[in-house]
Structures are given as structure tokens and as C-alpha cells.
Image (cartoon, rainbow, N blue to C red):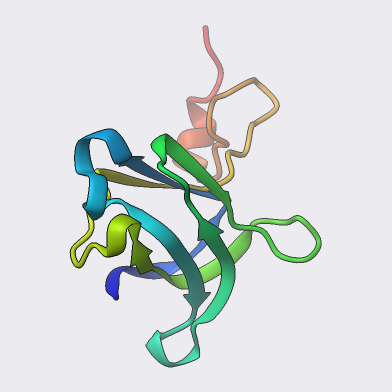
Length: 124
């Protein structure tokens, strides 16, 4: 079992994306993945388990709770439970973690919350 962990501060997470390519990696390509989240290593809970059949490209894993809202977590664990052709090592070419984007009233600019930013928020 191979494990990749991301540990930061508590963050809202919307989607996990994993890039895998069966044609290039063959037996190194994961076939069964478990995604777990939690506050620390001792209380991780599995929220998704994926069966992959010769994946080629991006695999999008929504990380939502039972109410379809993004989850808040300190830790994400991606556990590779099995590989194609019973391979021992695994290749995940890239992993991306996406958070929700909040739009402000003036479009796609971030909200200005401090006094210094509020003084210069208008365009002249």
C-alpha cells in the first residue's frame, strides 16, 4: 500500500484531481484508491473509494459531505490499495487539490477586507 499525505492548516476542499496514464505506466498505475480526510493521522475517515480501469488523464474526485458541501479538513490521505497487473510500486503523475472560489460583487476580484485595501478598492 502506497500513501501520499498533505498536511496543512484546516482548509475547505472541493475537488481532488489525480493524473494517471495506464499506457505509459502499465503495472505502476493504481487500480483501487481510497481517499481519507481528518484532523490528524489517527482519526482519518474514508470518504471515497475509487476503482480505476486503465485510466488515462485526469480523475476528478469530489470531496463533499452528505449535503453536497465542500469538506473542511486538516489532512488528506490518498491510499493506493491496488495496482493494475498486481504491480508493487505506483505512479501518480500529478495531484491537484482545489478549494471553492468566492466571487466578490465586482466580479472575480478578491474581497477587500482590511482598511488599507478598502481605501484603494475602486478603479479611477
